[in-house]
Length: 75
Ligand SMILES: [Zn+2]
Image (cartoon, rainbow, N blue to C red; front, side, top):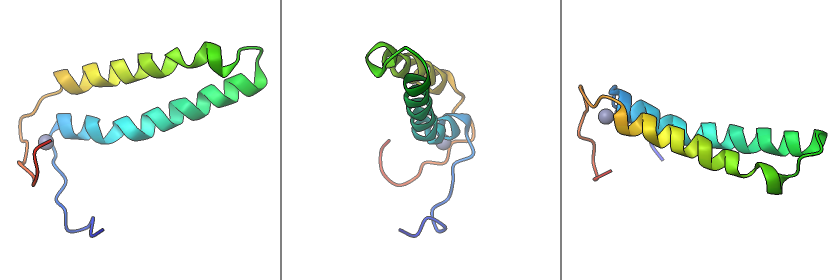
C-alpha cells in the first residue's frame, strides 16, 4: 500500500476519523488489563467500548469539515 502517496486531509473530521481505530484498540487493551488485575471481568466492562465508540462518533459528527480535501472514494 503506497500510503506516502495518499494525501492526508487536514480537516478535523478526517483527523478524528483516523483516531477512532487506535483509540478503540487502546480502550480494548485497557479493558483487558482492568479485567486481569481487578475483580471486574470483561463481561462487566465491555460496555465501555460502546461509550468510547459513541463519544468518538459524536466528536466525528460535530467536527468541522472546513478545509476538507475530497479524496478518492466516498466515505
Ligand atoms: Zn477531510
